[in-house]
Image (cartoon, rainbow, N blue to C red; front, side):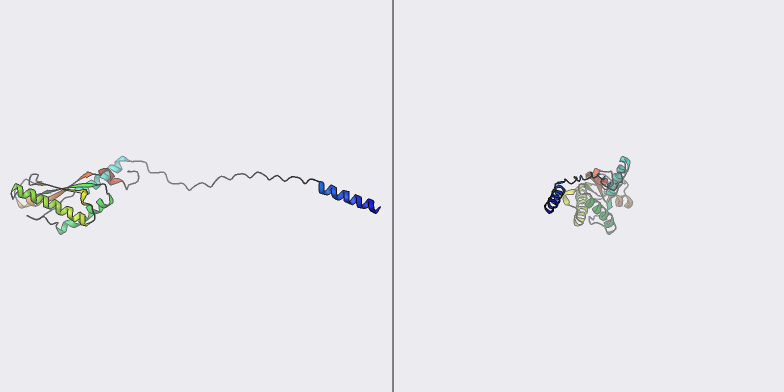
Length: 183
């Protein structure tokens, strides 16, 4: 009996060990959608008129002229803030180039007035270069007395005619590049 009961226990133990455990199948993991990226605002619609207005405003600022004393080519103290603003605009827009055209009144010889107009344009160029603008972006020229703003022959007309005019000759389209949508 002891043997029989040992055999039964051994058989029960063998049967228990040989029983296959049910296979555990992992449940499929449901993919969670990735969190949405924060919404970026849609770019403002392109408005060509805003860009053109900004360009025209910058060109008008660049076109503001400076005047000179009689027979002088030094930049006047009252014109330095205007030239400082031009320098800042030029430094912010490195593709912009300017022509600086010097003028004189009618009171000296044609040759002398051409030279004086050149000296005035170069004086303005040198001022802007001291402010950090590259000289290659500034093209001095002279018209002497040939293109007066005021054709009268008096001190008021002469003071208006002693000037340097500015014209954007390259990079005009980049003047509005800092405005969103104006590239």
